[in-house]
Figure 1 (cartoon, rainbow, N blue to C red):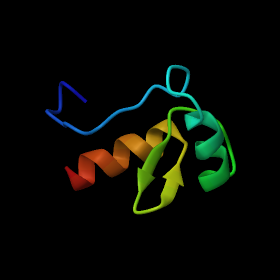
Figure 2 (tube, helix red, strand yellow; figure 1 turned 90 degrees about the horizontal axis):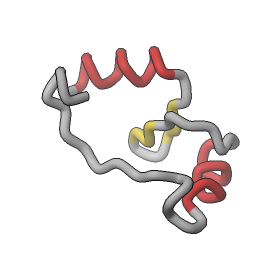
Figure 3 (cartoon, rainbow, N blue to C red; figure 1 turned 180 degrees about the vertical axis):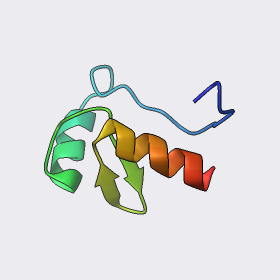
Figure 4 (cartoon, rainbow, N blue to C red; figure 1 turned 45 degrees about the vertical axis):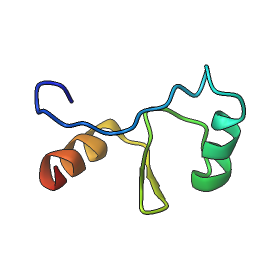
Length: 56
């Protein structure tokens, strides 16, 4: 993200209480990396990379 100058809010699911559970509730998995795009959770790294390249 730094090399593409993409800035966005990031969270650490291991450091923030309840965040991993919330991720599982919203997207069905507690897997990371994950990107929330308007309530839709993306989990696959290449999907996330492609989305960020196209939309930021």
